[in-house]
Length: 392
Ligand SMILES: Cc1ncc(COP(=O)(O)O)c(C=O)c1O
Image 1: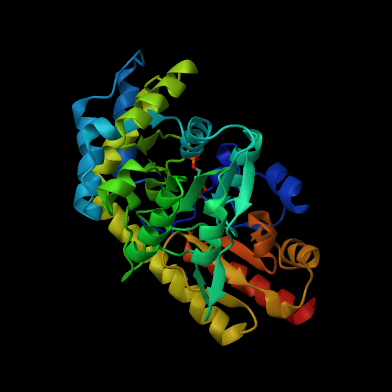
Image 2: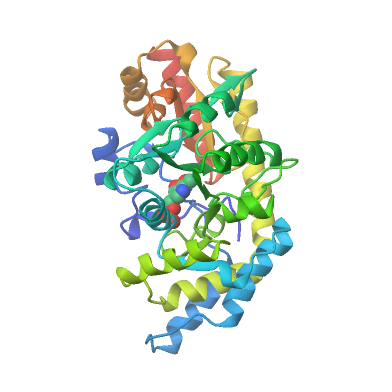
């Protein structure tokens, strides 16, 4: 398969491309979409073949997850990330946000504080608010053009006895940082000292650009593994967000039992025969495809960097270390938050996530999903240059 191939996604009600969605979110249904975090690429052939076979079998009754499913998942992390996940540490639920919501309920009470590091994935805010917890901000800071954690501020926020949880996003959506072992260890140690439980969302862990390396927080130390839960899923890696389960890896036995009880209370325990077929194939045979994908994504990052540098130097790419979501600084266009969003959607004809969606710390920025054929990125850059030249 070629990642250059353009595939019409409108056959199905895709969030990213449907005109009604674009109109609702951008007030313009002619925008070229680079917002929702899925890819415009076909899933790996091995996944499609496995699903086809499963459909052809024709019976879709009750199933359970077999040993080879677990094997595929555990081997993937061992082989690609040198992280040995204990089989008994794995708990399932339908999505990563679902796992995060359960963990929030499990490790805090209504009114308690949950630390996040904005600008950050906006659904964390909704998971915190809808569970009647308080969002405590530990904003990232920019040092020499690079996003960093603010450890002094984290220490102060974690020291409040009402703060019970920290959600770490590793790699970070939207700023693209792949947190180093030292950074994670330091943040984890602060949380441990103040008895703040760590939920680590590592859904983007497979999408990392060389020479950076994804460090699973639970692989750093036994103490940290026992003081955290890691949320994983093959959704981003293999572009199967609509056909996927999520995994919560929980080393602490008591916390694991509590997670199980929570999931049980709401009867979250069914096996979906299609997601099982997709996931087992992806983790057991999808490595080569992922390597090709990473090379293509890297070439898209290179294209964007060069284009902006040569043609639109007022617009700055924050160099991503991981994820296919790039964070772009539009501050020097001098537009207010609202006008920047309008300019991008109405004048440039682009659906990018306005930076303020990720917290007010994101004002002046926008997030662009680059997991698409490069010809679409070229079109986006032409539209942007034209708009900057003619409509500012
Ligand atoms: C950091 C992060 N976590 C979670 C999700 C959503 O995961 P799920 O669809 O499994 O809930 C996304 C999707 O964009 C994400 O970027």
